[in-house]
Structures are given as structure tokens and as C-alpha cells.
Image (tube, rainbow, N blue to C red; front, side, top):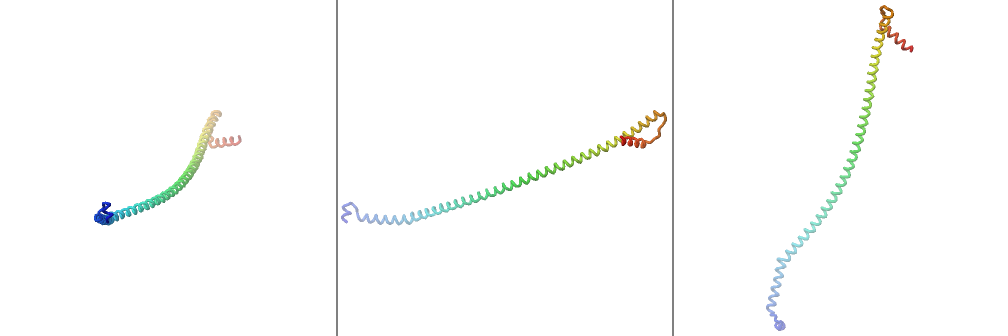
Length: 165
């Protein structure tokens, strides 16, 4: 122990400092290091859980995005089919309307022809009556006496003449 004395170290103080240091280590280990290590371990677990949840969320987000893209693709296809069907129906409707319009136009033309024919027949009948009256008047004037022939006789005569020519 003389060696310690020559170096200027008091061995009793040294032993007391060693004991104090051991007590300090024990207290620090008990009160600081273990709780600190526990906190750090809990923090590491939370970070690991957060990373795992982030990966799961990313995976779920990717799956949702893929599902959404699939649904959008299906919706676009359905929309295309609907548009095609609507165009086809529009073409059919237009065609039907054109056919109906053409048919109505033909009916109107046919009715107009019938009306024109009826008017023509009416005008011809009126002209025949007037011609018959004129013939009777002309005959009376030329002959100087009253002619008592009926209009039907004159009309028959005119139609015979018309058939000959």
C-alpha cells in the first residue's frame, strides 16, 4: 500500500470512491438506464408498427387504385356500349321518322291527286253543261225556234264525239 502513498493516492478514499461509484452505477441502472432502454424499445416497436401500418396502407391504397382503375375501365366500356346503343336507336328513330314522313308525303300527294282529279271532273262536268247550254242557245238562234232537248242528250252526243276523235 505504500505504492499508493508514494503516488499520492489515499487507499481509504479510493475504496470509498469505488463503493460510491458502484452505488451510483446501481442507481443509474435501476432508475435511468432500464427505463430509458424500455422507452427506447417501446419507441422502436412503435416505429416498426408504424412502418408496418404504412406498408399495409400503401398496399391497400395500391389495391384500391387498381380496383378503381378496373371499375373505371368497366364504366368506360359500359358508357361506350350505351353510347353505341343510343346512336343505333337514334339512327333507327331517324330512319323510322324518314320512312313515316315519306309515307305521309305519298299519302298527301295521293290525296292531292284525288282532289285534283275530282276538281278536274267537276270542272269538266261544268264545262259540258255550259257547252250544252251554248249549243242549245246557238241552235235556237240559228233555227229561230226553241230546242227542247235535254242536257243529257247533248252530253251523250259530246261524249260520243269525243270517243270518235
